[in-house]
Length: 159
Image (cartoon, rainbow, N blue to C red; front, side):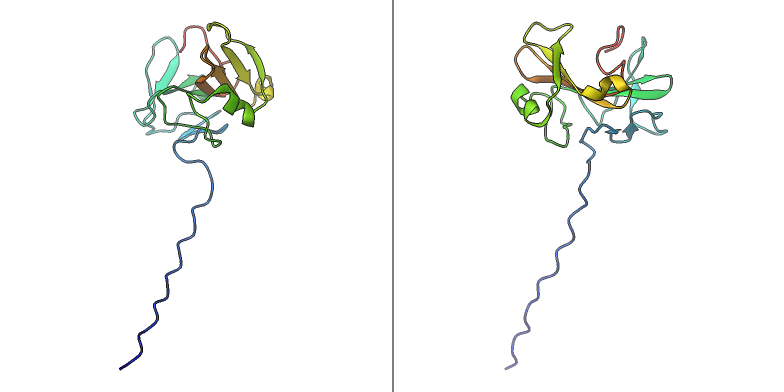
C-alpha cells in the first residue's frame, strides 16, 4: 500500500487592488466619465434635455451628468441610485453618517424647507472638483454631487 499523496492547497489568487469600482463616485468621476474632460466616444451617457447638456446612462439609474462647453462639470446621484462614495455613503444615508466622514460647512437649502441643507466641501470655490451633499428635510442625503463650481449645485434651467 502506498502512502496517500498529501493535498497541498492552491495559493489563493491575490486580492484585487483597492480602488474605485464602476459604481463608486469619486472626485475624478464615475465609470468612464471624468470631471474636466469630454464624454468619451462610445460612452453610454446620452443627452436627455434640450435646455442644457444633461446626460444619463442606462448603466447608472438615478444618476446624471452636466456638460458645459464640451467638458464634464458635474455628476449627481439621487435616491434610487446604487452608486456610492468609497466610504459607502449614498443617497438615503443619514446626515449623521455623512458627518462621521466629512466635516463640511452647512448652508441653507435653496429649495428645501429647513432642516434641509447643503454640506459642501471647503475646496468647492477653488474650481477643483469638490463634493456636495444635499440633505433633505427628513435628515437624509437626497443627492450627492461631484464636480466643479458653479454647477456643483443647481443650475437654472438644468436638473
